[in-house]
Length: 225
Image 1: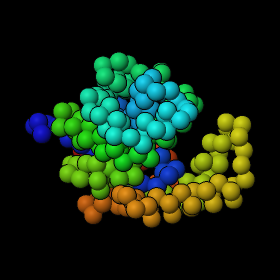
Image 2: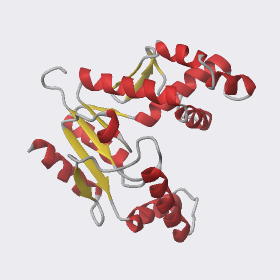
Image 3: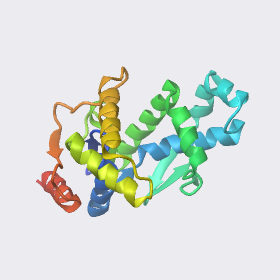
Image 4: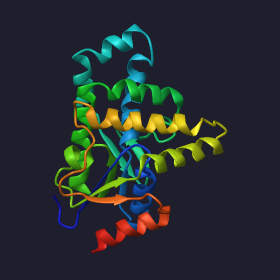
């Protein structure tokens, strides 16, 4: 790895505010935020252009050895918050409901996950990055210089999500949101492949009762120290 380059891994449960905080940290430190979800959308976009976004041909392709060959020459990078697929800026093209569905289909395939983890690790050797997810510090960037496990109580996370849905005009009962959060936690922590857990060398930041700016400053102090 080049001298002066560092990696920040942010893991934690659903609704902990990982992406919001990671983006803010990236801006403060002038480093690249790696949107791992967008990478799956980009793969979905490339697959859709190749065989379409639904139908038997898509299902056959996703389950075939052809996909592995197809992924070999795939290149994904981030430049100033924009995602580039094989040299093309696809930031606006992938932000559609159709590509969200494609990302979901592609993320379930081991060959896709392996390819993207390789790309993510490679990015971390070329430039300073911050990446968030469920298994960044325990799997993707095991040797990251900084590891943060960002969490909050299920009730706090459910309350944030509840308010967010209300603002979007899609209210759900708080009890239902809380139940979904707890189920998501259980699923993430018990999945067979790289389950959610705090890395042994990660610093836990519990944001229960903390505002966004307070969380950002807490993490920045840790990194600057």
